[in-house]
Image 1: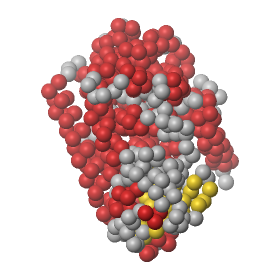
Image 2 (image 1 turned 120 degrees about the vertical axis):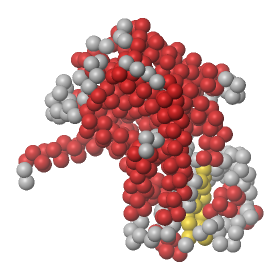
Image 3 (image 1 turned 135 degrees about the vertical axis):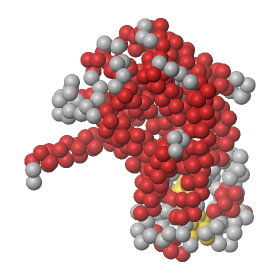
Image 4 (image 1 turned 30 degrees about the vertical axis):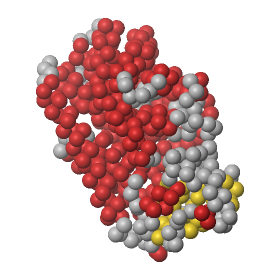
Length: 493
């Protein structure tokens, strides 16, 4: 075999192992993993060790977009609509009007600080106007921040990317043609968001219907079919100029609430794939960066980043959440949760592909803002939440996962339910629960110990119950175990 092939495969495997290990390191030191991945790309690149030379912006945009589809779909899979519904209004307003306000103020600040043409300043501001789903999911997933705030921030980050993409396209056209049509832009915005939503919901109904009628010999094919469906959802929406980003995220949310075979395998598969996508995407984009070019922008970059953190984002959050019941502590956390990440960097490749004169300035300034935001906001959001008293309690270990392949052949679901404090079933005996005769609690995990369920077993907060139920009984089972605390269900078959 060609030694260069072996060397390449060795390098890829070593980088992958280091990337996986670095996610744990990032969590321990309180820094988003994207910082380490981007740093790795810069280190391996042309101005670092020089081991990898990569300058293809078009290929980088393609790979990064594919990675973003995977990350957003996985984020939707982890989003429970019952928890999202109460915060849909503030999250939706922040994801639309909030991005516009943030971009508008940041554009004016950039115009004054850099002295560039207004269209160029607005293009840069549109690119960094949204919070990033990949960064938010990674930072908040293991944090015990108040559920309302956590879901609001996560939903906003998953829904605001289309608005940033839309504004980027509008201002890029302004830079290229020196013309800006507000009316046409508004029509396009409504079309992209509305049709993207419809396509995501439609696919969320169609795909589960197909999955329940197909019997694959291997359970491993179900996650692959869902992955392909996510890309089809994105492609269909994009072909008709709707928002593929909205479509994919909504599709993931719809799948979360649907009955699908091998649910636990599907979720775990996409968790791992999303993590891999983040590593590849951030490392690849880091290869495009020239640290010397970014170093020349430190002065104005710091001023713009501070303006974005302490002026643009807080003003946008204040105006968008006014009268929605958030107190001053919650407002501070929402304002500070404006992390930047993958989407701004992906959007920064648009000027590179378009070849506008200011492409290098925009690209490296975006990178500087993303790294600064990730380092400062990403590493301090959890301590800030604790200082503000917005933490629900100590972090709980991830629920144990079980998988029974045989249940697929006998029309049985294995449903996993975590009992949170305040649930109606808390303190009750299993014999007191009104469960259908086809339902049986097969195991209880309590404090990392397996408890054999009996009629006189009392349910405690933090218990993870594994319940065998006949097909069609899932909703009834979840109704029994859903109380004021809203236990988190994760059905598995």
